[in-house]
Image 1 (cartoon, one colour):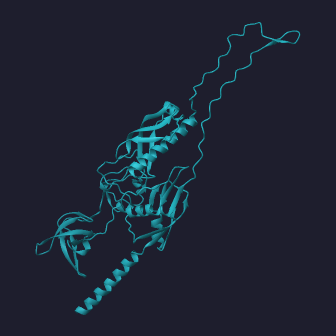
Image 2 (cartoon, helix red, strand yellow):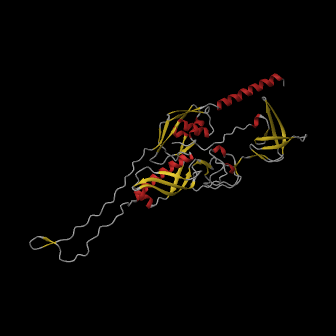
Image 3 (tube, helix red, strand yellow):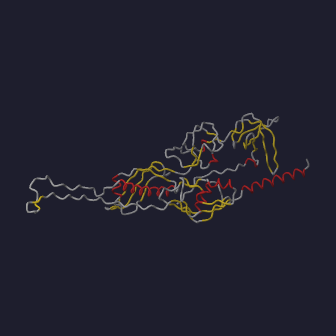
Length: 395
């Protein structure tokens, strides 16, 4: 084969690859809407924007991308164009991948519901004393003993009904969530549980100022000791409150049990808010996209409802010891392929040693596919990877 023919084939191959890469790099237009009413618990990109300038498959994939947890019924939050860009950036997209424009601010949620004002207790009305009349028709006091006069029922002036207590608890919850969102930076991704005592509710019913929250500690989730303060009838008050805070950032959750070594498929996991009773080791890395787990092996048994961390997902094994593999070297547009023997088991992306036949020469290579390795320094060893980050908050 002459040199001109080789040059011509390399040029054609380069042109085809460039065309494929350019076709994949076509950017999508994300046109934001002005107002969105949630219909499910997690807000996706397709809920807040129209996706244009891409094929149907890519449009559907982008539309299903989870962003935030929907605000509670009766609340409304806003996201700006910059906040949407930050979330998409944390998902692995840059400015050349997606163009975000349209409404400068998106309203997500429902109109605020009017709060019911506490109704004061109604004082009991005393019953009229029985009287009698004489033969002339005049009304006179009775001559018989009717017993002691009825005493009025004493009522606590601060008595609260169950509905009023719930309304006060909602006010406290709103103040605590807003405080923890500001401290953690996860706007719209915080929920709390606490028990508001009857005594605290009675003091709060006489509040004359906004409820302020202080205390707690980083990372601001789990068991927190907070203080709520406000101005009451007799001056400023500060009440301690024990709160359990939950991080609702959508992560990878197992939808059914997996055995150790089982390959993870799209039917096994989903991106959603973690269960409230989920426990994750502090040194584990959360997975925020399906691409971080699909096709990987379960490193241990995983139960339904467990949060799946990156440490639980092993890349699939591609090379076995003593297997005859293909060793590829690429540089300057020239690709060289030869056979070698794998010296160890290896998984996708791992670095291992291979031995060339006859010469016993050993080379270090990276696993790039089933039975295929690329020598270190080769352009084929550059694996494009985007490690997603937790989504930015929104208000």
